[in-house]
Image (cartoon, rainbow, N blue to C red; front, side):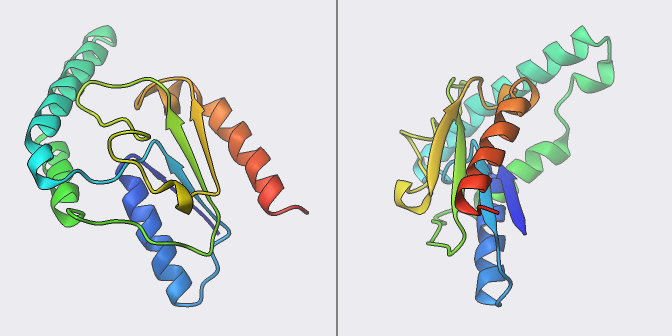
Length: 162
């Protein structure tokens, strides 16, 4: 079983992998896509505000470009989910896994978002491999999915040769 998590979904993916390993379910690999550690409480307010402003700006631009007014407003559900993840995982730190971990990071910074390798990194000793890919936190999945796929394929072939 391969488990993947994007952004704060990496926290959930890592915890799921740890839980499965504890219960005897083998995990083949964990893929983290531009995931970073939760911020300390003191840092959250300003960073989250800046990030939300950027999210709203991007959503508004996309909605206007697609002529879809329904896509120009960040929903209260999205804001509540982001706040919920931050509260649930406040102070959380990942532990070691038996499964190898591939951490693919965006090379470009988004306003209001910590840079994975500098501000709030997953501990380097936990990852089998860390790679930087072109794009930012948002475009890494949309514009660079082919690179994610190629990196994952090459890495899986290396750590689990047939």
